[in-house]
Amino acid sequence: MGRRFLTGVMNVLFALAAVLTARVVIEFFGRLAMTAWGSAIIAATDRLVLSVGVTAPRTPYGGVFDTQAAITVVVLLTVEWVLSFVRSRAYSEI
Image (cartoon, rainbow, N blue to C red; front, side, top):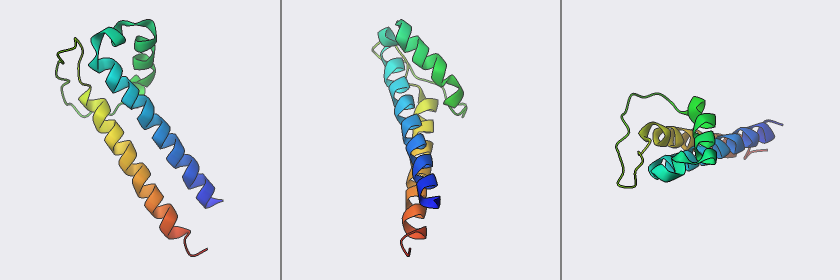
């Protein structure tokens, strides 16, 4: 039961990281961010991004590199990696 729970949490973290990666790509290219679906993804993921106080530099493609979203992706994938380590160590003796 615990192994399945950890796997479920890991899958959710990975899915959130994938969605935030899409946000970073959309914001990187300014034209994508101006589309209806691009702005919808950005609005939907606003609450997921950690506020770390880092500014987003402009890109040559008319957008910005969302540094805070990129940092959030790194944090989510790090937590997912730690959970995979815990899952494999805690349940390897069973």
